[in-house]
Image (cartoon, rainbow, N blue to C red; front, top):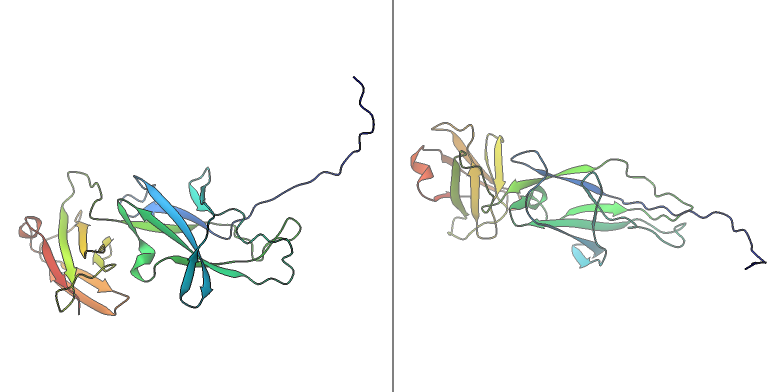
Length: 220
């Protein structure tokens, strides 16, 4: 069979950019996180108001969480950057950003195949994941389990409970936390900081007694 009338087309190319790349880090091991992870994206529609975006996240071969194609427009010449926030949830972790915010906010500059975004994101950002109360700690690790409450006895979520910043976790929605004590000694101070509410509290560590039952820390 002979085919005539072929027309040679100029080569075409397409590119993908992501305005954010997140390298998820297990804060306890400093390695890749364990268990199931879920990522979602919101767009800011007005100050303090966010709407879900139906754009799935992608993990690169290096393990970086990205949203390829975000910010792409047909004509970006007169467009302005849009504000988004990334959210990560996991069965065994509390993302570090929960200490101060509900998500990790960032701007997505407009771009297309002929116009690169400005600026171009060239490096990933580390997002540390703190162990949740359900974290699977090694059996040899001592773990202080407890509850964070306010002055009225109500649970307080997203309080950073830490020991000299060497060990750190966030309380969950029930106010519950599980703090590893790899290097702790008797009499050290356990600090609890509620950055959102500008409150704090402390507890003097009593070993081994504090390992036998749940402890309570009050922030005020």
